[in-house]
Image 1 (cartoon, rainbow, N blue to C red):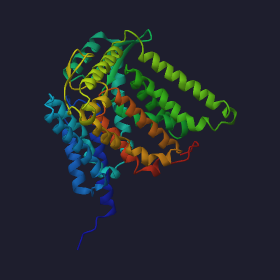
Image 2 (cartoon, helix red, strand yellow; image 1 turned 30 degrees about the vertical axis):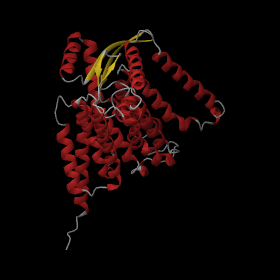
Image 3 (spheres, rainbow, N blue to C red; image 1 turned 120 degrees about the vertical axis):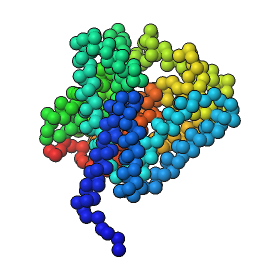
Length: 403
């Protein structure tokens, strides 16, 4: 006779899983390079083991995982057949980078979007404190810079100039995984009266971390999130009904113009490097058109004018994916965009619409930075897959609720 599990015990099992998942997210966010705490692998294995013991896996996502690793394996075989020079450390990094997707087997068990909120606030508070310390003391700035450099540049500190404006940037490598929390805090402040002051504080802390990141995409992301949050409400205002869409068009054009000006700014080192990468890609594919079909192999190196060196990876994630796997890269892209097919019918709900926008922004930013196939990138992917199973918690009416 099978022993039944008491409801109270089931609750504690779920809470234990939530706590372990939250701990893994916190460690991934606070130590993205795994060079400080060295706990990413430990917490990941512990979470997988916990799920294996207490929760039944959902094998409907098994093809997603197997397809990605089949593409990586196929890419390795084509690379070996073409005698490509493979960076083995990079190849191992790719294999490990996709490994969090194993949690798709239990992702319906967790609301991963909500589990990111607390870790995001903690890490952003760390960024605020470190930035203030650097602003007040050159000694502190040097100490933090040297510590970061000794730990695989977990925090990238730069002094850059955007359109003549000098900026001191502190880019925490996990910041891209904060995108859903950024939207959520804006949504709460804009729509919900209860505990608004608490979420306003969280908004300020998280927005500060984005604005001081020193990279164009992440610095502009808070403005995009605010526009997405405001859109469902503002378009209902009667006085702005006829003026709203012209104003929206002007706003979008202004943002696009600003992005274009930043992208074409002469003398900006990052721009020069990225454009030089593109020239090298064009030369590579012209010399080896077969790479469009079969790829060069995951982790394969090529000479880039941007770095003036042989490298296995650049900031152009999707072009690197095409270079690695050829046409089979479309399989990986299909796994990444699949959640949109589940979320699209719910796009009229304000929070779902905003989270879709946040995920789209993540995919865009990850395409111009080496952030996609990493543990931080996969946290975002797990979160959006989780969202498709918890839509009832995100489908409240777009009008401001009293909560």
